[in-house]
Amino acid sequence: MDEAGWLALYRETVAPLYAFVARRCGGDRALAEDVTQEAWLRAVDAWRRGGAPREPLAWLQTTARRLLIDWARGEGRRRFDRVELALDEQVLAPTTPRAVAAVQQALARLRAPDAALLEEFHFDGRSVREIATAAGASEKAIEGRLRRARDALAARLRPWIEEARTP
Image 1 (cartoon, rainbow, N blue to C red):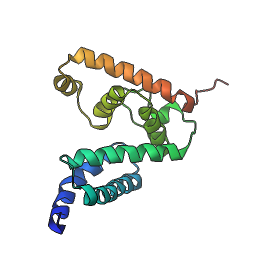
Image 2: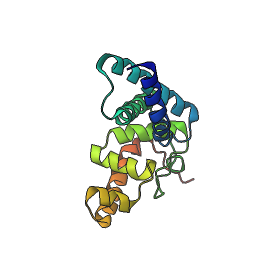
Image 3: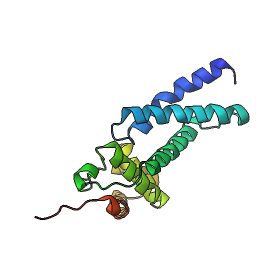
Protein backbone atom coordinates (compact mmCIF):
# COMPACT_ATOMS: atom_id res chain seq x y z
CA MET A 1 0.00 0.00 0.00
CA ASP A 2 1.34 3.44 -0.87
CA GLU A 3 1.41 6.45 1.45
CA ALA A 4 -1.88 7.84 0.13
CA GLY A 5 -3.57 4.49 0.74
CA TRP A 6 -2.30 4.34 4.32
CA LEU A 7 -3.44 7.90 4.96
CA ALA A 8 -6.91 7.26 3.53
CA LEU A 9 -7.31 4.09 5.60
CA TYR A 10 -6.17 5.90 8.74
CA ARG A 11 -8.56 8.79 8.16
CA GLU A 12 -11.42 6.35 7.57
CA THR A 13 -10.83 4.31 10.73
CA VAL A 14 -9.22 6.47 13.42
CA ALA A 15 -12.34 8.33 14.59
CA PRO A 16 -14.58 5.25 14.89
CA LEU A 17 -11.73 3.32 16.53
CA TYR A 18 -11.15 6.10 19.06
CA ALA A 19 -14.89 6.26 19.81
CA PHE A 20 -14.96 2.47 20.31
CA VAL A 21 -12.02 2.64 22.72
CA ALA A 22 -13.17 5.78 24.55
CA ARG A 23 -16.54 4.19 25.42
CA ARG A 24 -14.61 1.41 27.14
CA CYS A 25 -12.15 3.59 29.08
CA GLY A 26 -14.40 5.24 31.65
CA GLY A 27 -13.45 8.75 30.64
CA ASP A 28 -9.68 8.19 30.70
CA ARG A 29 -8.75 10.17 27.59
CA ALA A 30 -5.02 9.40 27.83
CA LEU A 31 -5.74 5.66 27.96
CA ALA A 32 -8.11 5.91 24.99
CA GLU A 33 -5.49 7.79 22.97
CA ASP A 34 -2.73 5.34 23.92
CA VAL A 35 -4.79 2.27 23.02
CA THR A 36 -5.91 3.80 19.71
CA GLN A 37 -2.33 4.66 18.82
CA GLU A 38 -0.98 1.24 19.83
CA ALA A 39 -3.70 -0.55 17.85
CA TRP A 40 -2.73 1.43 14.76
CA LEU A 41 0.99 0.79 15.29
CA ARG A 42 0.29 -2.93 15.46
CA ALA A 43 -1.86 -2.68 12.36
CA VAL A 44 0.89 -0.98 10.35
CA ASP A 45 3.36 -3.65 11.41
CA ALA A 46 1.03 -6.55 10.61
CA TRP A 47 -0.47 -5.08 7.44
CA ARG A 48 2.88 -4.22 5.89
CA ARG A 49 3.78 -7.91 6.05
CA GLY A 50 0.44 -9.46 5.14
CA GLY A 51 -1.69 -6.72 3.64
CA ALA A 52 -4.70 -4.99 5.14
CA PRO A 53 -7.64 -7.21 6.10
CA ARG A 54 -11.03 -6.96 4.40
CA GLU A 55 -12.48 -5.28 7.50
CA PRO A 56 -9.70 -3.04 8.87
CA LEU A 57 -11.90 -1.39 11.51
CA ALA A 58 -12.98 -4.76 12.91
CA TRP A 59 -9.30 -5.83 13.06
CA LEU A 60 -8.40 -2.61 14.86
CA GLN A 61 -11.30 -2.96 17.32
CA THR A 62 -10.32 -6.53 18.18
CA THR A 63 -6.73 -5.42 18.73
CA ALA A 64 -7.89 -2.49 20.88
CA ARG A 65 -10.11 -4.79 22.97
CA ARG A 66 -7.14 -7.10 23.59
CA LEU A 67 -4.92 -4.13 24.50
CA LEU A 68 -7.52 -2.97 27.04
CA ILE A 69 -7.67 -6.45 28.57
CA ASP A 70 -3.87 -6.55 28.79
CA TRP A 71 -3.88 -3.10 30.39
CA ALA A 72 -6.54 -4.21 32.86
CA ARG A 73 -4.49 -7.25 33.87
CA GLY A 74 -1.54 -4.97 34.52
CA GLU A 75 -3.57 -2.78 36.85
CA GLY A 76 -3.86 -5.60 39.37
CA ARG A 77 -6.64 -6.18 41.83
CA ARG A 78 -8.04 -3.44 43.98
CA ARG A 79 -11.28 -3.24 45.93
CA PHE A 80 -14.00 -0.89 44.72
CA ASP A 81 -17.24 0.28 46.15
CA ARG A 82 -20.44 -0.45 44.28
CA VAL A 83 -20.83 3.23 43.37
CA GLU A 84 -17.50 3.26 41.55
CA LEU A 85 -18.58 0.29 39.45
CA ALA A 86 -22.22 1.46 39.15
CA LEU A 87 -23.46 -2.10 39.56
CA ASP A 88 -26.77 -1.05 41.03
CA GLU A 89 -27.66 0.84 37.87
CA GLN A 90 -29.21 -0.38 34.65
CA VAL A 91 -26.06 0.96 33.07
CA LEU A 92 -22.52 -0.28 33.27
CA ALA A 93 -20.52 2.86 33.93
CA PRO A 94 -17.31 2.48 35.88
CA THR A 95 -16.30 5.89 37.15
CA THR A 96 -12.52 5.56 37.50
CA PRO A 97 -9.76 4.12 35.33
CA ARG A 98 -9.05 1.41 37.92
CA ALA A 99 -12.73 0.45 37.97
CA VAL A 100 -12.57 0.25 34.17
CA ALA A 101 -9.68 -2.19 34.58
CA ALA A 102 -11.76 -4.39 36.86
CA VAL A 103 -14.71 -4.33 34.45
CA GLN A 104 -12.47 -5.18 31.48
CA GLN A 105 -10.97 -8.12 33.37
CA ALA A 106 -14.41 -9.36 34.38
CA LEU A 107 -15.75 -9.01 30.82
CA ALA A 108 -12.80 -11.06 29.55
CA ARG A 109 -13.85 -13.86 31.92
CA LEU A 110 -17.47 -13.98 30.75
CA ARG A 111 -18.82 -16.18 28.01
CA ALA A 112 -18.13 -14.38 24.73
CA PRO A 113 -21.84 -13.90 23.84
CA ASP A 114 -22.55 -12.36 27.27
CA ALA A 115 -19.57 -10.00 27.06
CA ALA A 116 -20.51 -8.99 23.51
CA LEU A 117 -24.12 -8.31 24.55
CA LEU A 118 -23.04 -6.14 27.49
CA GLU A 119 -20.61 -4.23 25.27
CA GLU A 120 -23.25 -3.65 22.58
CA PHE A 121 -25.80 -2.37 25.07
CA HIS A 122 -23.67 -0.45 27.57
CA PHE A 123 -20.65 0.71 25.59
CA ASP A 124 -21.94 0.96 22.03
CA GLY A 125 -25.32 2.37 23.08
CA ARG A 126 -27.48 0.00 21.06
CA SER A 127 -31.04 -0.34 22.28
CA VAL A 128 -32.67 -3.61 23.27
CA ARG A 129 -34.83 -3.28 20.17
CA GLU A 130 -31.81 -2.86 17.87
CA ILE A 131 -30.02 -5.84 19.41
CA ALA A 132 -33.17 -7.98 19.22
CA THR A 133 -33.74 -7.10 15.57
CA ALA A 134 -30.13 -7.88 14.64
CA ALA A 135 -30.23 -11.17 16.56
CA GLY A 136 -33.66 -12.21 15.28
CA ALA A 137 -34.89 -12.47 18.86
CA SER A 138 -37.64 -10.86 20.90
CA GLU A 139 -36.95 -7.83 23.05
CA LYS A 140 -38.04 -9.85 26.08
CA ALA A 141 -35.41 -12.49 25.28
CA ILE A 142 -32.69 -9.84 24.98
CA GLU A 143 -33.77 -8.23 28.25
CA GLY A 144 -33.48 -11.63 29.93
CA ARG A 145 -30.05 -12.25 28.42
CA LEU A 146 -28.91 -8.79 29.54
CA ARG A 147 -30.10 -9.43 33.09
CA ARG A 148 -28.28 -12.78 33.23
CA ALA A 149 -25.14 -11.27 31.67
CA ARG A 150 -25.17 -8.43 34.24
CA ASP A 151 -25.56 -10.99 37.03
CA ALA A 152 -22.64 -12.99 35.65
CA LEU A 153 -20.55 -9.82 35.42
CA ALA A 154 -21.44 -8.87 39.00
CA ALA A 155 -20.36 -12.35 40.14
CA ARG A 156 -17.02 -11.93 38.36
CA LEU A 157 -16.59 -8.49 39.96
CA ARG A 158 -17.46 -9.69 43.48
CA PRO A 159 -13.78 -10.16 44.47
CA TRP A 160 -13.21 -6.47 43.70
CA ILE A 161 -16.28 -5.13 45.44
CA GLU A 162 -15.93 -3.74 48.92
CA GLU A 163 -19.28 -4.24 50.54
CA ALA A 164 -20.60 -1.44 52.70
CA ARG A 165 -19.77 -2.14 56.32
CA THR A 166 -22.27 -1.45 59.06
CA PRO A 167 -20.83 0.36 62.11
